[in-house]
Length: 274
Length: 213
Image 1 (tube, helix red, strand yellow):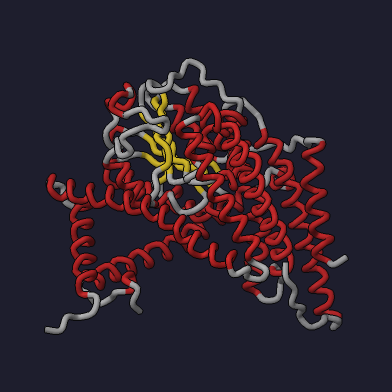
Image 2 (image 1 turned 180 degrees about the vertical axis):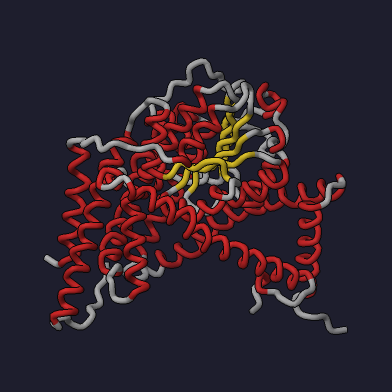
């Protein structure tokens, strides 16, 4: 068995352990998640929030728990929710979010409290076009003309929207900062994959993004903030053990390297894949 | 009379850029309306491109099947079959949801999602071992990188705070100060480069977006 195969096996074991028996490592809420939560919580009654789904189900493991928790929170708040986005999988992601989260719609009525616009192709120009005209699609996802939907009567442009949120794994936050926040003053928040968090951090630190829910960890934090622990909390145990394994391997690997270097037993570099 | 190559597209490009810049910075209704129409036009063009992608896939994969290209034709056949299956179910889901929504959701949620997650998981295993092999204290720079990496990794996982409460604080500092500072420089310089590039497009000095070098 090659070294990398042993590492694969160890990683699989470390991920499987908390899945079989959750450990319950305490999750501390980060400032960026709390800022995100507080901003939504403090929205005045009747405020409009646009949720842009810019990822597909391929990112569900990482972003699913955060998506479920944030959608549940949004539906619990006395706000108007408009769902759209640049992912062609948006209709399925929306249905899957409601189903997986066992989300209770409560007193929310379709057309009065929330509307699903559907997928809009075109990247940043599409985000800009939607900001200029929230009636861009003419119909909602189910074919109802937007002019006949009560909630949409007062929603015309991004100026009528308090907050735009993006579920993303790229650099879509820049679209909304450029096309929604700069011209219309709409506040931007993001639910983001771990890799992209570092890229978006500069906008959060400068105050251009009011808050970020950082991947699986952020999802767990958000679940705890809304007092509905779910898959995110279980997932953080896997995150902790796998990260711990990585750090352990890095330390062992470097001790080995330093030992070989100082004892003069170091072999020439090996070139290996995966 | 000899015309410069690409003169038509260059003029269209320049005018479009000027219109979009005026739309962003100037408030008169005329500029706003023009910008709005151009943006909506882009959405329509992007939708047409999806159809073009469908035709492109057929043009690429059908010859591979007919020629029985070794090691490829069966993948192409599967691609074509699934394109048409999804097209059929998507139309069925739209016009007869009662009949087709179950199968449509099943393919998306139980096949496509699972495969997508599996690909992500494969990448995670690869990145895991690649990190193990790459993060070595061979030089001072590599050492600083490795230590920052360890702190960032532990800071992102709840176990970091359990090991030592200072780890998340240091990880946050790395993210908020070091990473942000570096990225700000990158974002500002690349944005200035973008402004210069756009200016070159307007005056016709650059035409890379038109397919020229």
